[in-house]
Length: 234
Image (cartoon, rainbow, N blue to C red):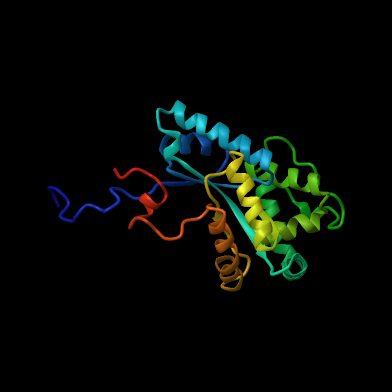
């Protein structure tokens, strides 16, 4: 077929370009092309560093950093009380397929963690091995929280290596507010642990708390994803 496309232009101009990945190559690709970046960060300091470096790369690529939205993945474990949330998180970890978690670690680390004691420390990963951005995130988490290999495998299987926040709506809102105000994120990629139960609790409890603090809209102002993300229509 020749000639112009015989369909109308999308209301948002063109689809929103989303990039996922925090490696050096991923950051370069995102700086040049992406409008939303999905990433993973285990700590505030790590997220702030990534946020700053990525925005600088966007500017260096001749683009407006305000037109690129950085959204770390988060798995919130919502409870009506902290005790309820902790109990749920503990229960979920007992249901995890540890073999699946070990397979995920093997793929990421380019090594066989099954050769190490499950209840021993997480082994050191040689430099340059595996998916470096996620390997660093997970090994740093293991060191910081003194995790065993079994515990890290459970997290790898359950949250796919993303950050887990366990607590009440107030606890989760406190965490989100800190990251937003301290230059660590523009928003979050929410990954409920159980569908639809945890998603329902997040909507029923966390969203109203975020709205009360002025951190979440009361309604969608626009009709397109692009505009609601604060991105220019092109």
